[in-house]
Image (cartoon, rainbow, N blue to C red; front, top):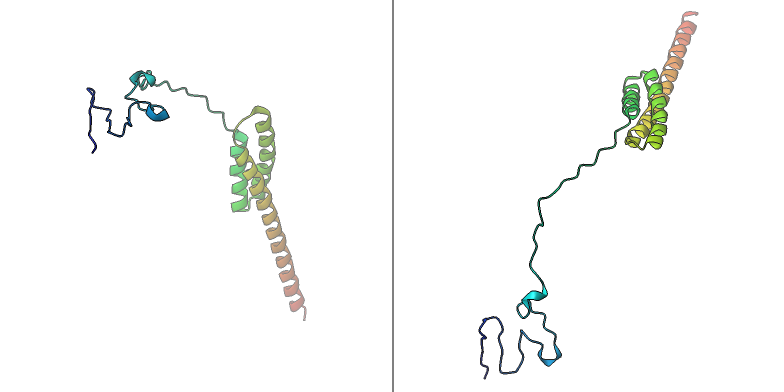
Length: 146
């Protein structure tokens, strides 16, 4: 038969088997916070008001932004000089970003890719367009000579 004995604190319970939850009987160490309340100390919570430290944001390279915009304008509007300007600005921006530690390397790379692809595409397009026009004129002239 088991009997339940409650100590004065009402926390530890002992059974007739001799095992106590609050003590170190039978070679088991006591891990209960209630057996030794000073073992863990008080919960400090938040020590004081939170302090926010704002670090300055590294500026973005302006040439990278302008170069990307110019390259995209050149790629979408067939204005090849804008693409060439974007390529030059992209190269200069990447050099400045490495030297100054600024942000904007992805924009500079975008300026280079969009610039090279746009200029290349439009040069091929206008070159083929001129060849087709010359062939059409030559074909019309050859047909009219009969």
